[in-house]
Image 1 (cartoon, rainbow, N blue to C red):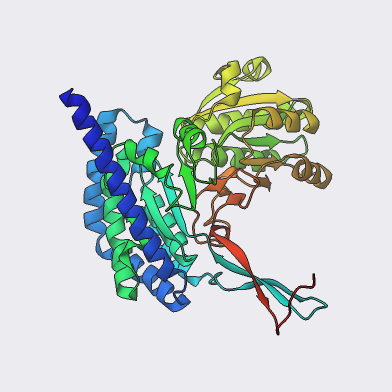
Image 2 (image 1 turned 90 degrees about the horizontal axis):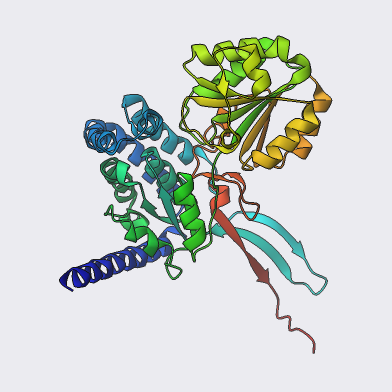
Length: 430
C-alpha cells in the first residue's frame, strides 16, 4: 500500500511540475509574441556566444551522458547521435546565428484584398503559441528547436531523451543567457527537468498549455506520441529513405551519392536505408556501388540477384525492406525500371525523403511527380534532408504529414495566421 501511495504522490508531483512549466511557458509566450525582431535576434546571437563560452562545461556534461549511454548499451550509431565535440558545439552556435539572420515572419502580411462593401481583409502571420518538442539522444535539438521557436515568437517546452539529460540542461543555460541578455522572459525556453517518462504522458495531455507537439526519435517513441497525444502533432514516424539508381545514371556519380547517402551519418533520419538499382544497367552500375559501400564499412543485404553479383552481400529478409537501420547496414534490390522503383517506394517508404540518380530528365520528372514524399531529390544525397541545408538555419524536425507543415519544419512552418478586417462602420444586412 505504501508503494502505491508513493507512486501516486510521485505522479501528482510530476503533473504539478508540468502544469507549472506550462503556465510559465504560456505567460512567456504572450510577451514573446509581440517582441521586436531586434530582441529575438539579440537573444539568438547572445545564446550562440554563450555556447562558445560554456563549451567546456557543455562537453563535460555530455561526457556524463555518453557514459550513461554506453552503460545503457546504445549502438555505435546512437552514441554518435548523442556525442558532442568542439565542432558540434560550434555548429549549434552557427545555427543560432543563422536563424538570427532569417527574416522575422511574425506580423508579415500573407495576402490582402478589398471587398465591394469597403472592408479591407488581411491575412497576417502569427506565432503558433507554445510548442512541445519530445526528442531522443541528439542534444543539438535543444539549441535548434529552442532557437527556431524563439525566432517565430513561440515559447518551447523541450523534453530530451534520458540519454541527453545533462547535455540538454547545459545547452539550456546558454539559451537562457541569450534571453536574459535580450530582456526576454527566460521561461520562453524550458526543458523538462526529469528523466521520468511520466512527464511525456503529461505533455501529451497539456492541451491548456501546449498548442502543438513535435516528436523526434525512434519508432516506438513516435508511435506512443501518435497513439496518446491529445495535442495536435507535426509527425514523422520514421525515415525509410530510398536512393533509386536509374539506368541512365552516371556510374561514378551514383557510387558517390549512394555511399554518402548511407554512410555520411548513419544515425540521422535522412540516411538512405534501401538502394534500388535498375536491372537493365546493374552490371554497369552496381559493382562500384557495392564496392564503395563495403569499403566504407557498410553491411550490405541484398535480394538473390544482388547476392549473385557480389559474394560479400548477405541475404535480405522481407523485414529488411521496412527497417530503419540508423546503422551501417543497407538493403539493396534490383528493380524492373522506374515504375517498379516508384511502386516499391510507395509500398515500403515512409513519405520522408527519396532520391533518383539519373541523367534522364524525363525519368527525373516522373519520379518527382509520382513519389509522394515530403522531400524528393534528383542527383543528390538523401543526407541533404535537413533544414540547415535548405537555408532555414536549422530545423525542428522533418514532418511527413500533409497538414500545415511538410518536410523540414523551420521558422515559417512554426507560425499560423489570423485575419485582420478593417472597416469604416460597415454592418451586415439582414
